[in-house]
Image 1 (cartoon, rainbow, N blue to C red):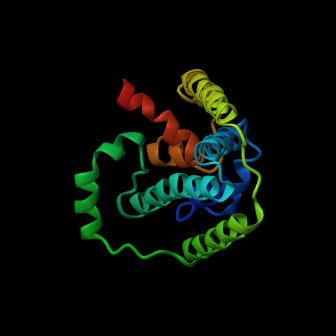
Image 2: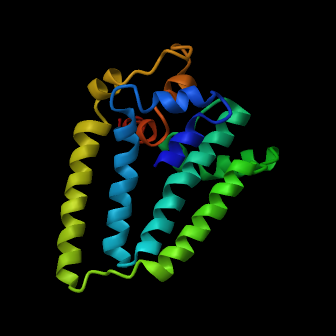
Amino acid sequence: GVTSLYFARDGLFDLSMFRSYFTTGDLALLNLVPPVLLMFLLYVVFNRVYAAFAGTFILTLIPTWISYFKRLYRNDPFYFEDIVLVREARTMTGAYAIVLTAGIWHTIAAAVLLCILLFFVAKPRYKRLSVRVVSFALTGIICMGLLQNVYLSDEVYAANKNEAQINRWSPTEQFVSRGFVYPFLYSIKDVAG
């Protein structure tokens, strides 16, 4: 979650934008709650901390980095609707040289090391399948409630403006000024319409 916020502004803004995520409205919470809930969901599915961590890392940071490169080459963030445009993405990536930054490589290395550590150290597991099923169902209900009432809410989105460092007329900068996870989830509205 926090790593995603760091990379959300990378290439467009300096670290003051990263700091602003923690001082503007509920932006930090709006960006951190989904990865935490995702990690819990993956934990109850796989019953392994390292698997939950690895899955959360992949499902959070890969889209964050896709957004970074999409902004870098096309000045356009990665929206939810872009997931269905896989063919266009393949064409686009062939036209550009995607070179991972040192920060991305360091993050991958740290995640691999942490995953290995969790594999050997974090052994607690749910003993009963019924506990896992109920935990999954309750967390799923919470996720759906948050998505519908918070993450897709125009009022919440408007209340969490972060326009001090941006051109408020730029959709890309509006997106980046709110982090990555939160505006990405908000962009589901464009698909759900």
